[in-house]
Length: 109
Image (cartoon, rainbow, N blue to C red; front, side, top):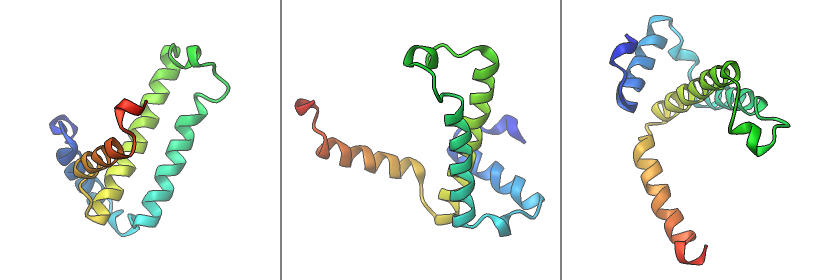
């Protein structure tokens, strides 16, 4: 199942299949998914709490492996949230970058 995941669409499809096989889709409401995502993001941040900027760039291998898992958990819930709401995350990001380019022009930085 996981070997074919190469982009956001195939990730979304694999997550749908995974949740459906376990009858979890009924629990995957936008509220629950957003809350789960924020919990995972908090677990991600926990690994960086109290580190200097330099330390955060040079994590020990074990910590980096834990951070990798939390990044995955956060991404999974974000993709599932977008799916539950019918949002294309790539299109949303592309549109937001365009809005930010207007809001924060490079020449004023």
